[in-house]
Image (cartoon, rainbow, N blue to C red; front, side, top):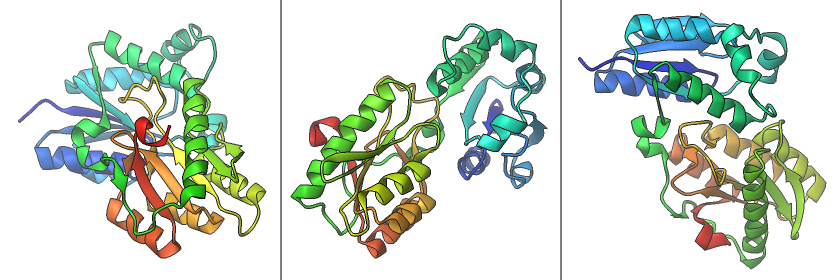
Length: 275
């Protein structure tokens, strides 16, 4: 049997999907769940499972070392509640944080990756295990954006790429060639709801969700899933463009079905298509 895979698990479905794929591949899974975030079902899928308080870097490293882990996948979100109420950095984490100029997501995750690698652990992209979540360029839905929506998508794409370059967010909302919302710490769903509300009922709304221009694909990959599409349908979004081959789409068939039902155009794009 192959060497075990280590999993640092936040919330939502992706950690469970990684666990299921590891089992399918015959790779033992050693899961370190973030307390308050990791799904309870993960315990039944992993060969070893233990919860850790967010910020307890030393114990997680010791846990992986004792299990003989060499490859690690880090995936899943962390809620604001956990960040505020259940964050207890230990001496190892504090030593890393003290080297940072700011606490933007990309900078923190790169520092975590450096810490893992300094202990002989190889950080792997979730796409290595689940390449089927990456989508090639093309229109995914029956609806095709008209010229006005395409113009708004191009603006949203440029804004989202600039947000990513600044390590602020990965999503922008545009209506009538005006940027209505740029994602920051609130996350994609909240940014979309805010931007669509500002656009006004009945106005065309376009959204772009992209990978950061300097993104390390092993860290914090942008993700959409059925819940994303439901939020956009609720908000009245008319078109969503995602970064082809970079944004992970969970349950693509369900996403496309929901988008078709809502009359929402969903397309996977590259820079040369939209810029």
